[in-house]
Image (cartoon, rainbow, N blue to C red; front, side, top):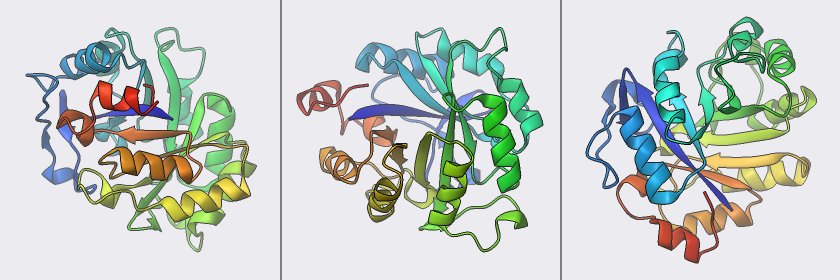
Length: 251
């Protein structure tokens, strides 16, 4: 199973995300690095874990600001490819992350989050702009309930939203419960992941929110996930490079 470290950006700082309560986020305290800067954390993940990719949640961009291109470049210079969630709400915003952008060759995946995208139609057009192989849709949840960015998603349940994404051409999907992020409560989406795996076995499934230990990773793997997003357990030392390697997990 592949482990994708998470970097939550707010301003010029990597923060510790807890339960999606962004106003309460504070600079991350990590056993891996003495500084909470994007390049400091990026370098630590690259050197300590030999990570090749990181998920970057640009919290300011998700809230409506411009993408943090300077921070992205700092992280990329650490030898990392980026999965970037910059709050894409429309195909027009997605154009900033199109494959032709000359300084974005290190962006491996562009995340389209449910909490940001304005409608099923916008999702379909955004996937087309980004490209099916680069786009990864994030099924954003809070305590199992979809977090939707507009009334256009009213009446859609999690499975219906996943179906809409699959019909739009999505080939990779993140299942992320923000209420579990950074809380140490464990993963709460196993049943949904099993359901999505049974319905769309061809989709590359990634889960995040609450991963604490090897048992959680095992459960995600058993539920059909190909990869897991992990942050807190890496920064506080619960999951080390040796522990992950001995269990057969790769970064």
